[in-house]
Length: 144
Image (cartoon, rainbow, N blue to C red; front, top):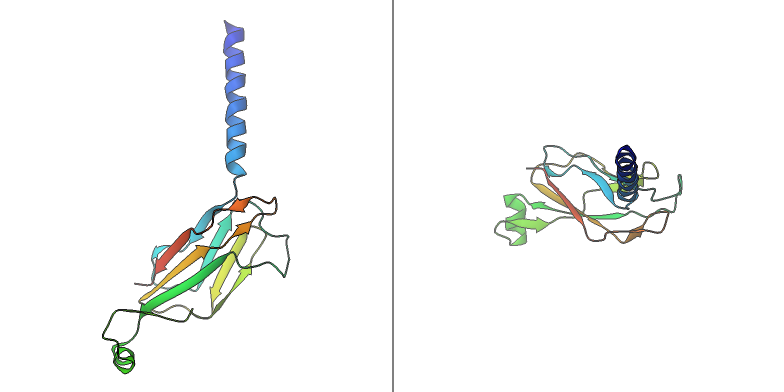
């Protein structure tokens, strides 16, 4: 009886550990911040679950594409013949950079004003082990 219990416990531990290892090694985004409604944004930060680039590789590509939209001022809408509503803006000035092998940052040149909506979309990418990152996932924030 004790031997069966011991074997069952050891088996459960082995299965549990192998499941934990397979989940931990799945390539993808762990966190992307900010999301939702925020007051002031100067940086968008993405943390991946696996190493994405060799440390210090200056040729590393940006893994995400930003698109920002917002409301132009009433004066700008009248001058352009638009009555109101969202207008596509140029991507606010900024630059993507790898902080380390798992962390990518998009740093805006200055804090975004109110009324901006930014969407960051995951580009086609693979981690260093060659595992594909799910493409097309979007992360959205607004500066209310």
